[in-house]
Image (cartoon, rainbow, N blue to C red):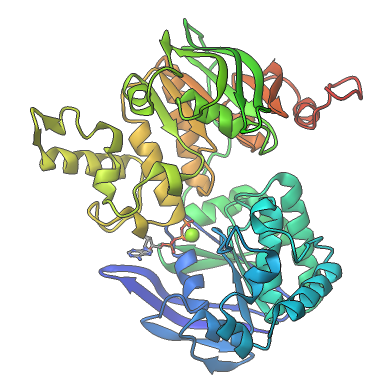
Length: 505
Ligand SMILES: Nc1ncnc2c1ncn2[C@@H]1O[C@H](COP(=O)(O)OP(=O)(O)OP(=O)(O)O)[C@@H](O)[C@H]1O
Ligand SMILES: [Mg+2]
């Protein structure tokens, strides 16, 4: 099925998020959309899926103009969408999630649970999805949950599938599987719109690429273009995909972790007897496949986890004995992995979010008085420095695009005087230009004498930043190596193997 957008315009107040956008995707074709954070990609897709109404412009399917007032209209027209934040209900089974909203399903021909089960099995077999219709969604890894969303679209017979940053939360293995499945869907004649900031994926899978900048289509590119060319087209300037950094000069130890474990409800270790040190002026990257205890270790370092053994000290303070706020105020900057849940208060303004942990400090408050002009000046400075694309610092954080939310969290955390920066997946969802900027900033933090810990599942990021690399596997740190270690060996460690032998670590 072909999908054609003509002159789609969508404004939020004075901000034109989509400015007369034309684009087309043909039968059995994968179109990638590239664009900076805030360029208008998600807005455009939400218009196509009926979640937003355009101010003007038309949407045509197979050459026929249609009106889409809701996702139901979109599904009826054969358009399905997989959102980045999945819209599944954790305590329901896969099949229950798919027949949810019964009236919709009835209208689209899915009558009951039994029928849904059979359909899920059929589609799952066809695409090798290995999805069990009776599994509880909460027990499924993210990669499988995403397949459930794809199945949902296919059950409603979607011929055009929209995926908004589908790989941001996937492991490299899950990403490979998704890309394989998308190719299969293409072979079956479906059309796919694929949004991603990862140029390597886009090059691998796209048949054509449309580039959007500040709400406008600025051009198209061939998937054979180099990553540098694509990056330049997106950002409108040269982007340096490598970080320039001098040899580090480690100083006194800032972080001392000794025989630290964190246990689950059954007393089993999620983080298992880890010990390490990070010095001032040094970046330690903690690498590993997602789900090997990194998140729990990161949260423990801020005093967020219970049921712990061993000790974590930052500049001599016992982090585990202190509360989170106390830890933040005594000199830890913390960029959480889930910005929506832990990094921002969506209903607060951008200006307020930029001072969340420090609103009671000077210059923002003093002796019970609050100084809005200082809050405003701070927000304007941070927004300019971190290039946060927003109409106004008084808009709520919820109005920001995904990547710009991330920039607000980073801007806040990197503008406090701290001794330790803990950055969890710091560039997830950022465009290449912003990744370059954030990486440079983290290296600057190091050069100013801070200890920096970067938790990252992206090997490119690990190598761009690290002075030393610790690899986590099944809760343990199985190796700490200099950043000169080969990529291959790090990959082996991440799989729980020891380079030079095939024994399991
Ligand atoms: N509900 C809203 N109210 C006000 N502004 C909005 C709203 N939704 C989006 N915007 C603005 O529209 C612009 C485009 O946002 P959009 O989410 O489409 O960007 P994007 O290209 O998907 O970026 P990212 O790569 O960061 O996800 C941004 O400047 C954003 O702040
Ligand atoms: Mg987006």
